[in-house]
Image 1 (tube, rainbow, N blue to C red):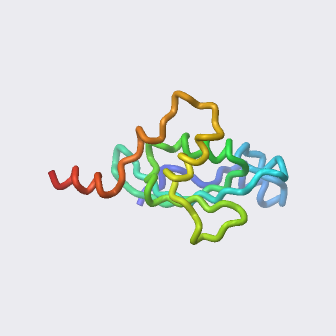
Image 2 (cartoon, one colour):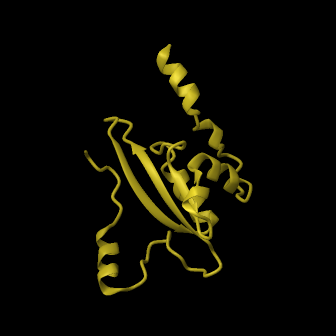
Image 3 (cartoon, helix red, strand yellow):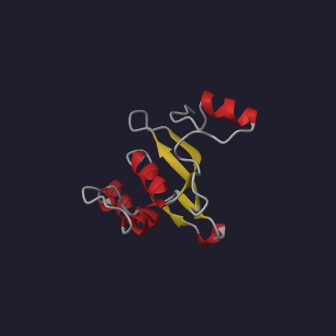
Length: 128
């Protein structure tokens, strides 16, 4: 299976080996921000190959913007977001998370509903 989104970069690996904080903007820079673990399923739109990956983001803004950046590839129903302080059983899917986070974002041009097709509706379309 071709992996079309890499989880780590050479820069990440260098910093991880040296035991330093990762310099990427997705990583924590404010101790008051909650951690979000995003476990997501991707589909390459050209080849239709599927892949699984994960990302750790800190804070609502980074989490919202990360999911938004992969919105055309992510399975919003199957992908899960685990929030610091909650159990895995309490994890919400990516769609529910984006609906929740959108109330805190000033982003009137983006509507998560434009990208979401519930599984039941998707099955009906395939049958027709």
